[in-house]
Length: 285
Image 1 (cartoon, rainbow, N blue to C red):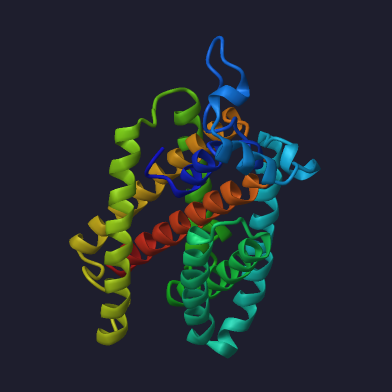
Image 2: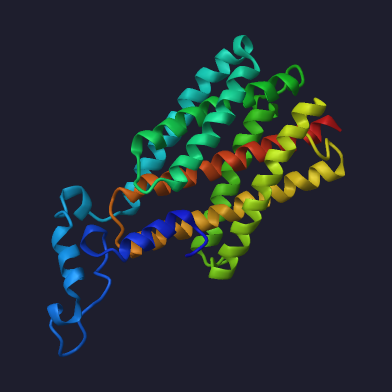
């Protein structure tokens, strides 16, 4: 799928033959031997490629993606809990560090030609810093009423809503209610790129004007922006599910489970933060 960076890399590698995970760039046709169908340069390139080791030869499974996703999620939660405790002392420093680090590492991971597990783990660490610090700010700004239950807190409500959206989108995707077509993928990807640009502009605007939510504030425009962002993040979940299915069907190497898990965690955290922002806007009314 041309618009998805994770599956783009899988498709590209699948066309690189033995060093990747698919068949070679040209296959022998009927009545033709392999050497007849390939040029001398292609044969030399094939000869120069390293032999596949145990890691390269093992294909990705759904268990691989689940295990990697669980591991990265655990890192985000643990680091987030630590950041939650440190936020009263370090204030906005933690949040800004989390924003800057995830932005830089996200770009490096997206454009790096090889999959770097340390970079993906580092991203999860700083994502935990970001989630923990922002959650603490929201919890302090919108405390529950005295005597209210734990689910009255803005953070527990955002977590519950995120898990509910995740479950609903997974069910809708698996039952075929939502079908990820090439057109659907292109539209969502372009919308995400546009919203990412808007989010950066909005962040600068919020810092310069010292407003809590930036453009739109807590009014109807701001609420509309949040609802659009939540819908976009939900659609991205469907793209993530589809990329995982296609990677497994294509026989991608096991190492791609890290990249797929990373993409899924990024979308989940984005969804959580957008739901948290929406609840904050609604409580500001």
